[in-house]
Image (tube, rainbow, N blue to C red; front, side, top):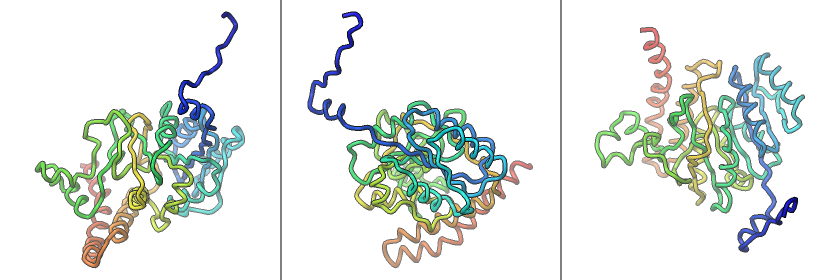
Amino acid sequence: MNGIVAPLVATTPAQLAAFMKPRRRVSVIMVVYMTGEALQQSIDCVLADPLVDEFVIVDNGSNRPDTTRLNSVVDRDDRVVLLGGHGNVGFARGANMGARRATGDVLVFLNPDAFLQPGCIAELVRAIEDRPTPCIVGGRVLNADRTEQRGARRGDITPISALMSLSRLAQRAPSWRRYEVHWEGDALPDQVSEVPTISGACFCMRRQDFDAVAGFDEGYFLHVEDVDLCWRVRRAGGVVLFHPKAEVIHLGHTSRVSPLRVELHKGLGLARFFRKRAANVGERLVAWMLTPLIIFTAVARPVVWSWRAGS
């Protein structure tokens, strides 16, 4: 038998079908704006993954060092497609631009300060096969110390759940636990699990699913567009999945943009989301009444952070 390689034998019709099925083409989409030093490592992690067929980088307006990095990447790897010159159009619009340019059957959206861990894309692509449509699969987002990051898996975000979670009232009684938005403290599931909301830092969708829900809502400039996308997938009869083994390290807060500006956009986005999902006149009235409070709370956060850091 030396020197003879046994042929691959499919023992069942399902195994034969899996063997004959062509591999899906994978496109990674990254929107870049004033990211800083983390950008290069994030890019390197993407290009090191053998399953990445195409890497679409949407430059919303980088500074000179980042622009130099991006041009260098384009020169050395023909999988990279760079879109630029359009200015800062916001994350949602930039991501949609990248998706339209991408040629992959599977779209993986990744933040520019997130580092893919070995096998992450393989796990995401495997998990999305044969799932109901539309479907979105989010990875397990980790802090630099490998603890699970807040927001990687979340409950349904409503005005009530947001208020109960933010005030920590959801943790005061077992019957209120259902209002807790953040699930990173829960036991980690041992397999892919259905959740209401995943993080936009790293997730994948089949192209037909992304197109079926019309991609990101470009009414969001920065933040909450991922929450909105998950909600629309569920509303369309699809599923949102959390993958405990598809790991990515997300630094967060690396952008050189003012934290005050970032939190303002987060507040504006959350207020818009509550108004958008209001199902009747009463809910719309509550959403409009909460809008000033949401925006004020969001803007106050970086002020409190700065005060605590200086005290």
